[in-house]
Image 1 (spheres, rainbow, N blue to C red):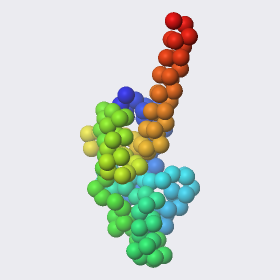
Image 2 (image 1 turned 90 degrees about the vertical axis):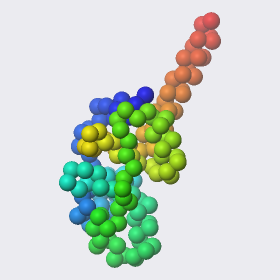
Image 3 (image 1 turned 60 degrees about the horizontal axis):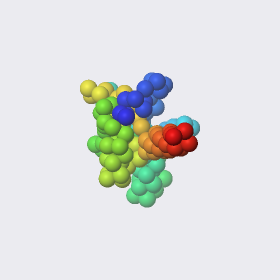
Length: 142
């Protein structure tokens, strides 16, 4: 299965910030939406990612003054992205290798979605449970 199928039918309003958004505002958005990361946009393109980890790293490096910085100064860039046709297993492998938990989904230069490792793991668990149930049913009726 591909990332495109996973994000199909999701609310099209992508929660994001811009390179000009203050860290204070981005942290408030993370807390308000109860999410772990935001794509950071510039001129309609993904410029980077801002995550809970970035908050911790910036707080250690700059103390509370980091809240007044702009996303363009503190985001993780460049963002690692995937194409909608990337398979779920490929995306999981990429996330594991790069030790990241969020991926913007980009098609023809435009962001079309955002997935977390939780989204991908949930799909895999659901799939494994479904296959196990089908095998149980097969064995019981054979």
